Amino acid sequence: MSYATTAEGVKLSYQVRGHGEPLVLLQGQANDHRWWDSVRDDFGSYLTITLDYRGTGGSDKPDEPYSTRGFAADVLAVLDEAGVERAHVYGTSMGGRVAQWLAADHPARVGALVLGCSSPGGAHGVERSNEVRGSLAQPDRAAAERALLELMYTPAWLAAHPGPYRTIGDPHMPAHARRRHLAASAGHDAWDALPGIAAPTLVVHGTDDVFNPAANAPLLAGRVPGAELRMIEGARHAYFEEFRQVASPLVLDFLRRH
Image (cartoon, rainbow, N blue to C red; front, side, top):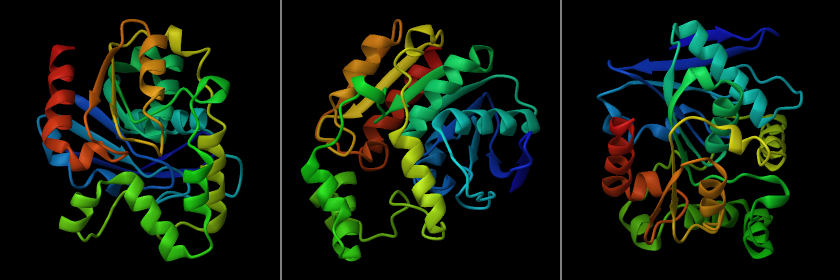
């Protein structure tokens, strides 16, 4: 495990594995790099770079406003420390929101871009339903966690895979960091910046994703010039894990073409 330090002194934990062209993997809200554990080996032909967002894992956890654009700047600090001038970027969920800013603000640093189960945010994004919000906000924590799992995976997959689950949040995050992450994701709005993205872009989404509604995928693909769109039939939010035999080859093919 290595560390980078931002200009304002925040220490960020990051992890580098393998050899080849650099590929940054960005996980969802309130999660550390372990989000990628089950599929990281699929990208073994690349030098994969992950990090713990501020507020998660081995990174500092300052109690101050976070933003997806700020997280993108943190990724840049990690790339600088790792000596990586240019990398492909694969972001899922909130990681896709971070990736949007990385590609928009720092085009010279991004090769190919993959936006998975993501959203443009703001007034143009499609929000989850009140029913979904209610299921996650119920006071019974076990019931709320079960609701989250059912938004991430199909019932059949959950029955066959009893855990542990790496995609439902870093259990060691302090409460203030969870709130800051939620606010960062909710405050994301890259709509005006998306047409300026020059990187070859692939948008991937599960057809049955209601956690981050699937309707966001064609919005993103239509807003980023030349973007390709691929919907994975029957997949929910964690399409990259449950449907890895479809999703990983899809992403790898795109990266090889660009």
